[in-house]
Length: 426
Ligand SMILES: C[S@@+](CC[C@H](N)C(=O)[O-])C[C@H]1O[C@@H](n2cnc3c(N)ncnc32)[C@H](O)[C@@H]1O
Image (tube, rainbow, N blue to C red; front, side, top):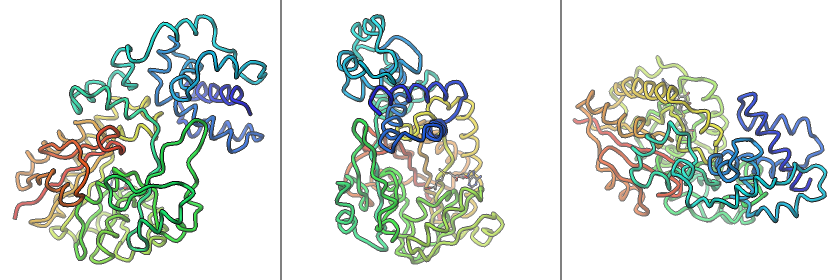
């Protein structure tokens, strides 16, 4: 397929999403099933246009002064693919699978505006209702921070220190040009894709099958490192999900001590068993029943709460979720987080700590959540977060606050993550 056919397919997928309110991955999969002639390269390119159009929906449609899927897809090519109205005219000419070229009206709209002069809400590429929340979290720099969440993400790997070194994995993955991450001590980064390219499928690499690395955003790796798990500790990973952070904690503990990996949803926990095996982790018990944790009450050195959240920090990877999210969902997540924090308190021993993590950038889920917790539980105090960062990581910087640390694409080059360490007084 040429660019014209790929562009037409992307418009079709975006229209399907809009009509049937479905996630991008589902709409792209269905398109692939009903167009089996399309090769892997075509699918990757179509996916890139769709995801770019979703990440940059406000600015892409603003460019063409139209809210349609067509405007979003053409706008994405203008903003992210280095195309111009003239280059698109040349490329689409004579391609019978291409959509109609840009009309005179559309070209006039593009010519009449430059993004630098666009209103804040357009440059922020985020829903209107989110803007007060972003302002509250980021202050004056909120537009740039929000725009950072609308860029293409890198692919980050965490080397499993139990089985390999970072250099060894980098050598094995030489073809991917993976480079050491700037902050996380065991991270490797494969740069964001360009144009119609795609990230390598690293999960087919022998090094992955041997458990030498996992796919994990650098922000998530940093949060796990900041949690401060050490050999011999009793650790409760209270929202373990598929175990991304559990695996990092086990490696930090050198397989010594005990991690109880619990999740309220058995199906979320299910993949952890294969992952633990592959990583040769030996100090983790996966637990699907809250009753089984009774013996840990008042015993845990560390309770990690990687809380369910809006995921607003991961908009680079899941841009369709950005437009589906609602104020009501934010409220539901905040209530869940409060309940989980209050429930998990009983496991922390005197002198032990809670590490509270979200992949959200909204203050309601982060600093405000911690402030509420400390008011309800005066037996806890926040640690000095900047000192903790220096001690555990020793490089880089983030947005340090009294009640936690905020990471973002702009400040740490990671997904948006929040971390807070709360110690139970003795
Ligand atoms: C952000 S995800 C965890 C991701 C995981 N820690 C990782 O690093 O891959 C949040 C998890 O919290 C779980 N969860 C939601 N409500 C819960 C509750 N009340 N108690 C325990 N886990 C809960 C969800 O099932 C979900 O798997």
